[in-house]
Amino acid sequence: MALDKIGIAKRIAQELKDGWYVNLGIGIPTLVANYIPEGIEVEGAMEVSQNGDIANWKIPGKMVKGMGGAMDLVASADNIIVAMMHSNKAGESKILKTCTLPLTGVGCVKKVVTELAVLEIKDGKFYLIERAPGVSVEEIISKTEGELVVPENVPEMVL
Image 1 (spheres, helix red, strand yellow):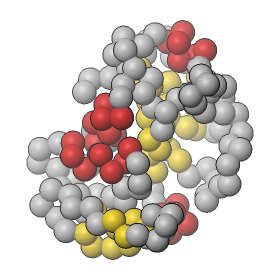
Image 2 (cartoon, one colour):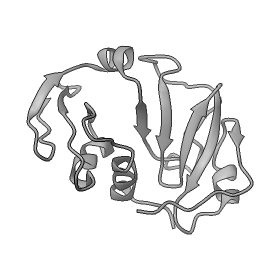
Image 3 (cartoon, one colour):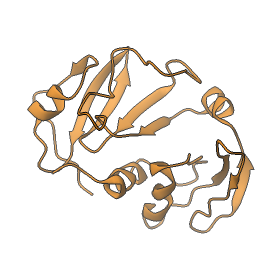
Image 4 (cartoon, one colour):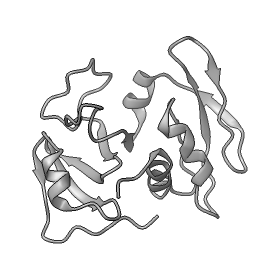
């Protein structure tokens, strides 16, 4: 069974480490703050939405300490994780060979978490790391346009 947006947020929260500085963008990423594991404290950031509103994220035990736009983030971040849906409403892959949207930064994303899988990006390829509970490797392959490297054993996510 594919994850919903909350499931994606829960899985991304597992990536966070104590003391990290985290900038959560608008959409699915804002949900991540609700699922930060016990004992993990992260610094939060403010994000400016497309209409100019400022959203303040309060992350457990911390107040918002900074502000940054997308270009600031990709220029200085070591670990960018994208939260997105694997396919569009027509069922077409959003995990593409080449990005068709304007790019803020090139080659900066390290992982992608979708409703179907966790993918690591290395050398222009997507490496299948985990699959959502009940989702088959075959389904992920069929819904991924970009070059996908599939190991012999792909574990299910534990949420």
